[in-house]
Length: 566
Image (tube, rainbow, N blue to C red):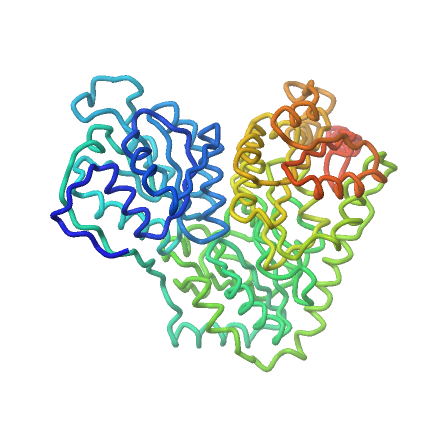
């Protein structure tokens, strides 16, 4: 787009929409509100270049925008109204912050002349979103919209990516101004210097049992391919952080598993055996370190190299032997063709870790279950398309996908690392709308499905065809697991009385059916893929099989033994 001159008069709403187009945005997820009518009106004139999707609920809209950021690396745009709308959208901002996802939330605001009177739906968004956003601000002068929006795109994508929240007073959006547009933004990232690369190579070359841990955001297909080429050429085993299993193909001979909620006990053992841990892009947070227990703080027992795009994160919890501020893309490109000359020495170590991963992903679950999703998913995983997008909610049911499916580019795994329930369905809808020809498969529990699910109507309206697997065991599984572990047989607040999910899904325009036996799953899944519209498969599972690794009975028995021993 050519830059406009200052002689062209536009409303604030028109200026804002022009900036979105200049910076490459072509869609937004919203729930409309009267507080930003001028933006909605301006969007009416650019329908050929910009798609506005009504998500039906602001939390869903924010989660859809966050998913867009994960899939594309460009800021997902969300538009909501003041007060309740912004409060509903807050969860998406929190997810984007903890997941390091580029996102911009635009919030309609009260008129400037009613500020500080507790006007209708008034909230101070700088104060509200300040702790959970990378930047929260308000535009009070329509002439500064190009400045603020250019900064918003740069902040959301530079360094450690994250969410930006911008409050838009409704009267500011109606002001008519003359102002030049900003130039298209360009993100700023830290590169790996020659001296830093030399130091990193020296650390690796001196190790006997090196282990890579990859995570965070900023992993394009090219970046993932570069780091894979380096690891495979040197026989260095690769692990990933929570819900980042798609960085390296899980069938690559270097893949050793992920550190998250479904981690194999053998991988924790191998982490203790490693004499060098090289972390690239991951934060070393609670999930990755099993609540900060697998790595000692502040001085790890293992030699630690931490490479992260934001220098402030390095050394926050763990003091590394070598800390480098660099983006994953820069690191992977620098390492792609490096041969450290130790491939033969590391071959046995790498092979052992990968074989242990394969063994764990094929292990029987124990017990005789009418519907065993470990077996069911193993039966279909080889037939899934290479570019599948798998979206995960919060809860134990996600363990089936994380343990028994395979990931790797061009496919993606999309899940909130902050444990937000209600995320998976809107994420799958957004993924399907981004590319209707690409299979989007959602994993969600009965609890999480009732926190969203209505986004199926959005999918039906706009032509998305996600498949949603609803795990119905009649309990909040993760909480029940912890409850039985700490307070066996004292159930409180974790039982659900579910209604008819099939009828509910059909009412929202989806193909739907119920599966109660392992043998019936593959055919039901095939029918869902052939439906040509959103699809829901309700999976009636036994709550006794509370996770992929334990049962309620085992938890109770262990708790009783612990009490007796104490």
